[in-house]
Length: 69
Image 1 (cartoon, rainbow, N blue to C red):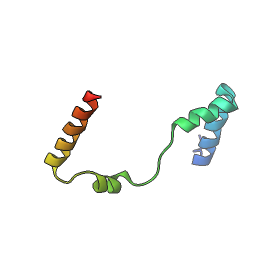
Image 2: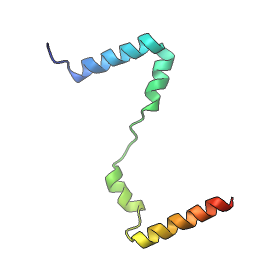
Image 3: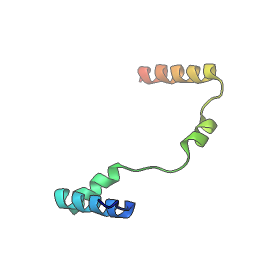
Image 4: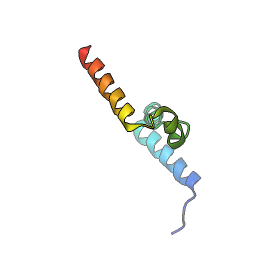
């Protein structure tokens, strides 16, 4: 058994999706899996409060506001 390259596996996967789902639904299926962009680990430090008490207070305030509407 010969090991396939990632490109070969990718092509066979796309071909299988198109064969089973058809070209339009294969594209729609692939659009579900958007890898996103950026580095979550680095970026979360920018938006996440460093003080856990402040963070929890913000979560509780947001939850209370959401329940009123």
